Length: 305
Image (tube, rainbow, N blue to C red; front, side, top):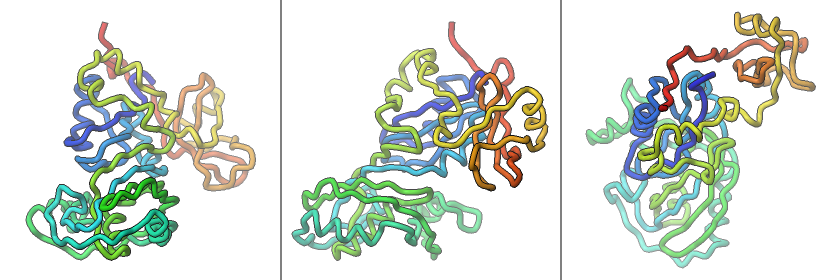
């Protein structure tokens, strides 16, 4: 699939995720670009960009676990949940040590309920919450269930606490900071937030923002990974030409990964190895198409001479 793939970007502070999409479109000459998981403007780190037909995988990559390093400032509560917001309250910070902070964090590991912050992209009545917040409107938000797999207390240097958080889709680190601040009795807001991983993609392999902005397009294209890399941990099947014809026309195929139970999502590859789409295992050792990726039409990928 010429022009399809994943470009892992290290987003800089001060730009939105939409800004990042616009820059990738401009630098690579592509129309179809999406991202897997919004980052706050002041947050930095891993922002996977999906190119061409790979945009069909956005939901599957966004569903995968994410990892963050968050520095919290204790003793302050803001309207945005980070230090860029308006201060609502301040309180003295007790002399906490690492063990005490770790003990407080334990209550937030597992399946928990979170109230989305007003400054978030959640929809309410057809509008984004952050749009209402900017107008001074606050609405009641229903708690949502999220999953936090692990919280590691990396450093306590009062009034700051640095945490490594591994979490599932939809987790708000600003809500976690606020809730942890309440548990500690002094309030807290996010001072710095770095996303270090989305699914299989880590910060060490991300393209620096400066390189995205200034390197030749050919050098950026060289960093683009195959679309299948977004689903690297999934089981996979490979189809011959006849089965590929069935799959691409929306029909189930008589093959499934060994010991895969019904409902399992799988990568589906053509005989030449290209990613053909996403399938779902059904009873009887069959796989039905869920998403079909087609080879991009000529001209969708722009490569300089």
